[in-house]
Length: 157
Image (cartoon, rainbow, N blue to C red; front, side, top):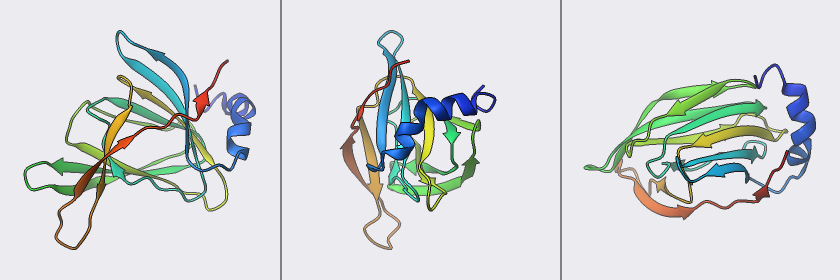
């Protein structure tokens, strides 16, 4: 669906690609019961997220325009380690998903050095709070830091 309507989507969302205001999250829709939120994210050229979780929510992430690399990690809360589980590359129309698990974390990166990428995200609830992970030294241990998700605005049809 995304791939076959990429021209339409690009025209409708083109202003997000041209804004050049850094990484932005735009709310498309939300519902309380069952909890679902739909967002479009704008990824500046070469932007990468920190390694992060999704607050125990399940999620689906699909590329609308541009290309992303998604590196998944398995989080071991006992020894505070993160082990890479592999990488996935998403181009327009490609998608990946993750279960509602406290052990899932990932890092995403826009593969373009010049263009803003756009992605569509569907989560099993409101991703208002999550943890970002930092590795302060060579020990292999990661420190979790609480983060708040900022919404740049709401998109309407």
